[in-house]
Image 1 (spheres, one colour):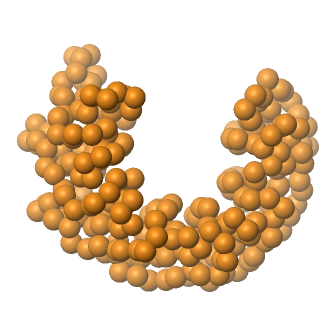
Image 2 (cartoon, helix red, strand yellow):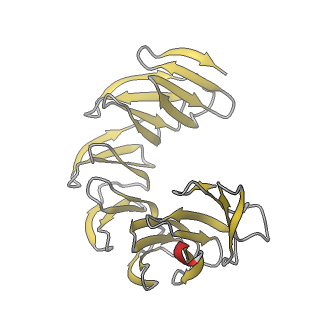
Image 3 (cartoon, one colour):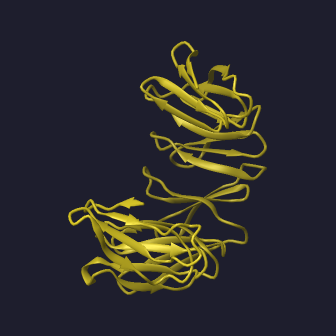
Length: 278
């Protein structure tokens, strides 16, 4: 379910359904479905609302994007070009959109004339595609390399200092980039994409959380939590007492919430004291 800018709700079909491929808009004022969007022939994987309040959706099997034009009562417009499942989309502006697919391509679409105007092709799968806030670049992973392109998909930088498959790329508030790989290596990159620090960890990094004071929590595939300062120097580490690795980590009001498959722990970040366990 997606809350639209109008306050109405966009419902995607249940992924378990074998026959329901349409989207539905629930009107907040009349309290019932106002539009049923039919056009996909396979299960819908995702959808986004554009700035002009049009909707773009994509499915698991027909390899198409559909642009639903709100001004024309959500008339469907098909964007055809991918040859495998579309995994995500990113809005560039009200007239442009990029789509990422399992066909190892990123496509840039002109939404005014419904045409593909640029294609970025790779020889391996494209992962973790993000639009950076600081530089407005598009960044993505291909195995052990991070690539940076502009919003027209023209290549700008290649970050190729990892030796193992990269798991994720994270943009920090400062605009710096953090990448971590399967070889227990974490790298910090400046806004101009120069590697400024390399950290060898004890476990594969799962996530990184930026705290309000500028420090960072590094979450590994383990039951331990590591806290680094703004220069990525290790401040402290503590064992969460979870029996398996920490599955989810949330920071809220100075408290650290960690969960595994069975328990939830709440910690005081100031003294690492366990406050509550469920």
